[in-house]
View 1 (spheres, rainbow, N blue to C red):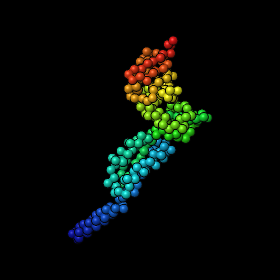
View 2: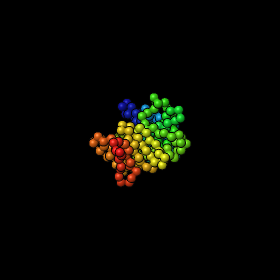
View 3: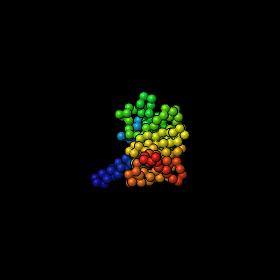
View 4: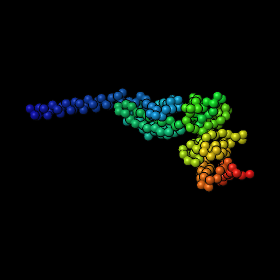
Length: 245
């Protein structure tokens, strides 16, 4: 009797194993039709996310109709890292036939002031997002000039400049109250706390960022009130103080 039961259990296990093997070997069962994208909880950037999703669906279509184990997750993640609109992304397999990508879009970098005082967030791809009221707008540098509604190239230039700044610090994205172009098409930044203007020139590099940060630290340590910081030079920074004649 024990031999019979043992043989029966062995037979059942063989049948189950064979069935499972056949089931999982079924190509249609393990084929990923489409990589599934979603916005990360709390990201709250639906308009920018929709634009990202549309572009990525096209780019990631090369991975469609493949078995789940053949889709290289590193390559999928590389696509995320190449898109500067994306702050963070995660990629994972979900058995049996899904690859899931969760995306956190970058936050807007500045607010474009409209004719009626409304504020239009500028995304990291320089696109203009729907207007917000003063009360609901995030604390970001304000960009003045109606020409920026039509001039995407100049918006892109300013986005690249802001991305050179650190998130926090004396000279950072959070330290700015306003950004503009003067009549010479040079970038001018206004600092929130001190009210100083920082003249940048046509673009911004890490050397300029470092020099301006050092100057601001020096002024703060000496309780000197500056009016203008001119960082347009290649190797120096010129400061005009408030009590200068």
